[in-house]
Image (cartoon, rainbow, N blue to C red; front, side):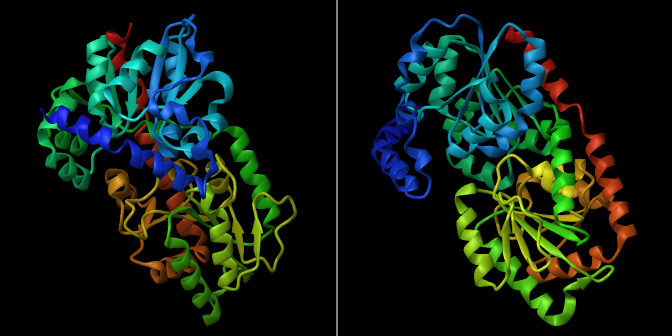
Length: 429
């Protein structure tokens, strides 16, 4: 009965979903592309019989797609004769997939969660098994997989206390979905406990596969080139910032510069690099920078960074490792305001000292451990952020200690990919 009522609600919301796509397309025209896939209609090119068995992995957006890198590499090695299908829900997730994997995988949007669309998806692509990254529970999809005999795992699973309370509101539906999964690989003991409280039966703590992502050599080289463009100036990075955070940071940084704090370290003028989380906001952030009186250059420009440039806008996709490699220290976006934080693990793996705000629920365990081991420092607000930036830019030895702690922290937690493969392999053949 719970899933029946859920299905009625999903059907009723389909017109709203179409309007939502049109609305989002005002800022991101990509939302108009591949429209039919979202409603269960696929191109004629997909109608042929698959010549190889299919592994299907669902990565809703950018973070999940990036996290899938080590898992996809391991799956290719373990199942060399299989093709890989990636499904997404956002254009940025799909674009990230194209940047990271090119034509080595196939990709489509996962349809909205109606019974007929999910059954049609499974008939069309006939996956041998499926993997859902992190926290995506689609009741009709899970039910369709059970009916079709397709093993389905929730892997790299995380569930914050806030999300657990939301799922508990629909306890019967959530329990049915969780128990319909073949098994679950959770990131931490706390994630596993929350999932089991909601009704999950087969939960194993496998760790976070994001620790297994290795910085590509070409990204590190790109970071060195970017740093050369910056000259001898200290560089601090605001990474993966979210709506509202850039204005707070720019205002606090502007105030600090007006108070004579522009000179740090050996007296060079520090450069702020801002990389917004979502590419559709690049122009918006550029206007914010100009509105705060900073001279702006963009990453997409090839010229050397001028000494008078106050802010470099990171208007590129798939280059976070390069930005971390170029920076003396990094603030992790999404943590200043209540977004739950973006990924701090990549910064730690690069040995970049980390500053992180109070909102860390998406990476609660990783943030706690990074702070405890000295890889990261906590900041309360934008003013505190700027104060910490200036203090660390003037303290090379402190940065070196944080850098070493970050690398050691990342190394300690590697191995989740292998544990995930151990979880799925017995039922995946």
